[in-house]
Image (cartoon, rainbow, N blue to C red; front, top):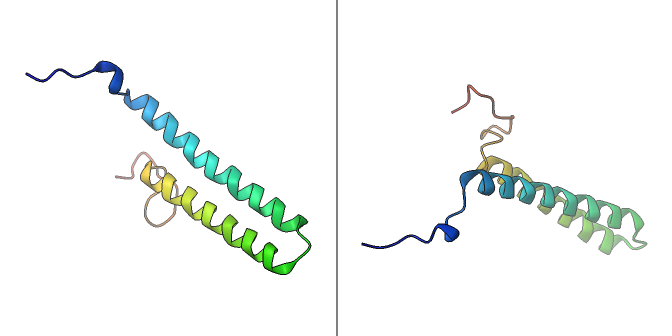
Length: 82
C-alpha cells in the first residue's frame, strides 16, 4: 500500500487562497505596466507596455475563470451559477 505524505498534500483552502493571490498579482503587474506606459517618452515602448498591460489583465480574467469567480460570459459567478 502506498503511503501519502501529508506534507505534500495542500488543503483546498490553501490552494484557493493561493490562486486568489495569483489573480491579484496579475492585476498588480498590469497596473505597473500602465504606469510605465504613462511615463515612457517614446511611442514604441509605450505601446509595448500597453500590450503587456492587456496581457496581464487577460491572464487575470483567465485565472478568475479558473477559480470559478466568473462564468464564461465574463460576468461574476453567483451562488446560483454552476
